Image (cartoon, rainbow over all chains, first blue to last red):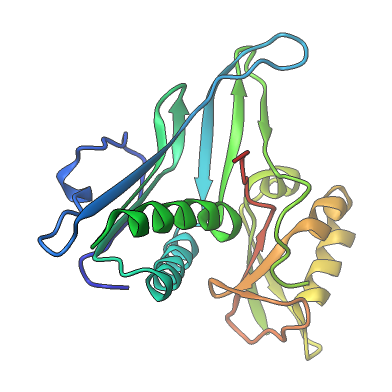
Length: 150
Length: 84
């Protein structure tokens, strides 16, 4: 990890324009930013989703994100990066995760950003729980996925 | 040998605690041994335990990993991938 990368787990709302997440740099010609947001859904019995609750194993989440940034740097010439994830309740349409990368050229920025969000969802210990309008909650633990060690 | 077991998400809900302190007098103790023990102590967790990844001191390890005194074992239920 480079010193000026930002890795943050926060229970405060994420604002894309937050100056802490600014990855601009004179050596970068492109910045790609991804925001993951809470998408509405209706349960099979017609009840609507109202929010997602996120929980993290924070020290390991930060460590794993750091590894992902190192892996991304092995593949693309990333100048600066910011990876921010919320914990706690995230309402509909609000961002739960922000990933920003700057690179010399635009293709690298898109690819690195895509890589980071895809990989984050495989290995970083952060879980989400659906919160439904009737007060019920359900953890999301997908059946399929990467098996890291078995 | 004493270890701490960290539980998260649905596994924590099933056990009712986010952390367990365990003591073992017979060595070696592997991650698999602890997972087996938890499945016996908390039968409702058996299915989820089988789907968990395991990490010791915040590093992913295999079930064969041997634990040391003071280790923190985290059980990592499948992380939510979402749909691309």
